[in-house]
Length: 389
Image 1 (spheres, one colour):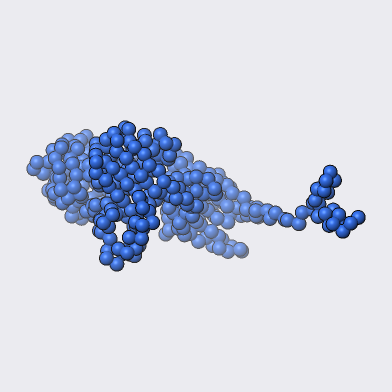
Image 2: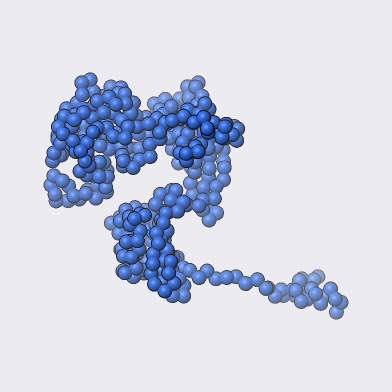
């Protein structure tokens, strides 16, 4: 056989109608781990789910204890997943993963080969990111326009949030308004997950144009700014009153303080203060409710924009002039601490809603509202050039 024929025969190449089998030198390494994913159902606890996944009680307790200073696993949320990574050879648990939110995950690993030494840490979720552009003309609403293009409805929420202080997306939107947005698409393991940051956006509302750019300052603070470097977001006061202490925090399970017979969610904070202590609006807004409000007693609800609303409960009485439709300024007194409604003593029931969802008033990330500093202006100008909206 000619030399070329011998070479082809040895390597397994199809020559004419002669089939010669290729002897592969590539070896596929088998994954040494196997993964168990458990959905968190209503009423489930970490210990219950760990047991269902085949984790020994002692191991589950050790993981729970070692994680507490980083993330309390008693706060895992219904609908999410706990991911358990086991060694295929020994069936021992090597790692626990839990997505705390869309940006961070809890990773708990056994750092010892002979004993169990669990190390917990928060890590940023490493998405693959693709930059994309969307634009449209509004016929009825921003939401319907975006969804009508087959885009993620969460993009509409993110865009509304970026311009929430400039545009009332419930009352101000008109037919013919338009938008253009440059944003991130996030992927994990090759699959689309969600929209990420809006990088730049333009919105035309009632003939007025609004521009916004995402920028992270040299002090590591991020936010949205207009073309002149002015923050699109306004600041809230840290607290609506001078209080003594917090008698009850934000929780999804609290023993009812009045009946002391059952547990229920308390998605607010209770701030103890003397009778008559003045309570102020945390920002500029409009009163949408004032007066008797069932278990809240005498209460006031203030709408700041399409995104944020606050509710103050158990007032002794309302401040002069406070009624539905009243426009209030940041720091303006709206009522006085009391114990009306479902209450055991003088305190303020203080809750905040973000897009209609309860959020913890003391952990919500409120932008500082400061403009771009002089030292960051050149970097901000580069961002504007990069995303020429």
